[in-house]
Amino acid sequence: MSTKPARAGAGVTAGFDLDRPWQLDDRVAVRPEPFGALLYHFGTRRLSFLKNTTVLEIVRSLAEHASARSACAAAGVGGAALPAYERALATLAESQMIKERAGAGPGRGAAGLERGFAGAEYGAAAGRVAS
Image (cartoon, rainbow, N blue to C red; front, top):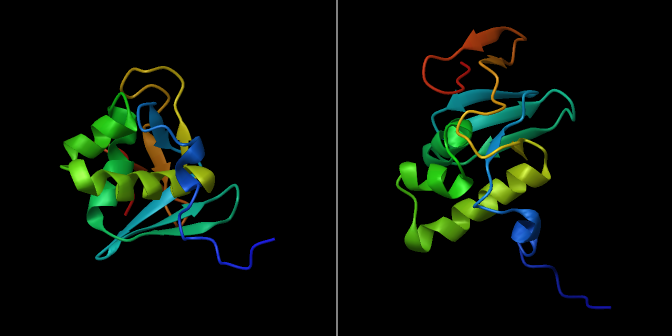
């Protein structure tokens, strides 16, 4: 047995496929913050932090794109930066904040309303937004 600590993020992306359609789980509330956002899952009662506004933009737009890769590209993420965002999305998938969407069409399976932290529901004119 090795006594070396595991490298942070090692193996996290193993079950995550950037080329599949993803969406924010319907039980997740998004609270935008200056640093990125807080995500709260009402089913698992877990809290996650998004460390920048770009990952927030990607997460919000997942349901509008045919794949996570295309959501990243639309947010201007590609090339050398893509693996870091892939790891972030894989971590969100592992913690059930995002889930694979049935079907490959944009918007399939996405709810039109999102539950806010106070329990209120907020409609979104463009994507899934909660204040």
